[in-house]
Length: 211
Image 1 (cartoon, rainbow, N blue to C red):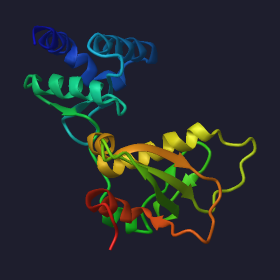
Image 2 (image 1 turned 30 degrees about the vertical axis):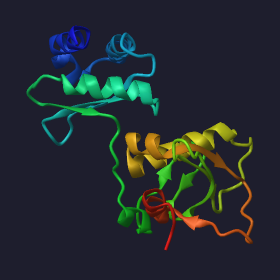
Image 3 (image 1 turned 45 degrees about the vertical axis):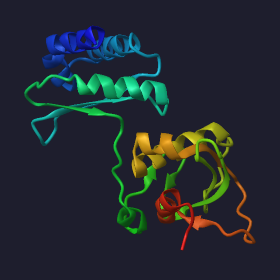
């Protein structure tokens, strides 16, 4: 407990610098980013952060995340539970969902602008592959319909990274960790298989089936 409080004592001392960080020169920003990362790694190697500087609002936000590592997420939650009240700051444990089913169904929703391509959520398809009978977590295979030809070929790992970005935006970091064991990407899209639209995934994860 005392060790966790030590982080907030350190952050409280430097919170004003982090609040105004986007206005600092790039080398100073890098120093403070690296120092925050170093402070968090003391508690768990998977622990990291997202820092939202104030723009149209007064509050800055520090989100502690563990990139899906369950053990690291426990540290993130425990740290946030001990967060002090600091004016103009919001502290959040884990990345929270930001997409609703309505957003996913909305064809006017802005595309995901990934490095190699833009992707509309209506072009994402999925199939359940397996379920772990001990953890009740699912494995899924996904496909992005109509991607343009890429040269050089996009590494498979990039597709997995992009899938996790979408899933965390849909469900939040904790829900993804609790319900999804593994995701795969298939470049092929066999028409004889019953692929599902992305907006149906929440119902399947919560109910275990689709009506």
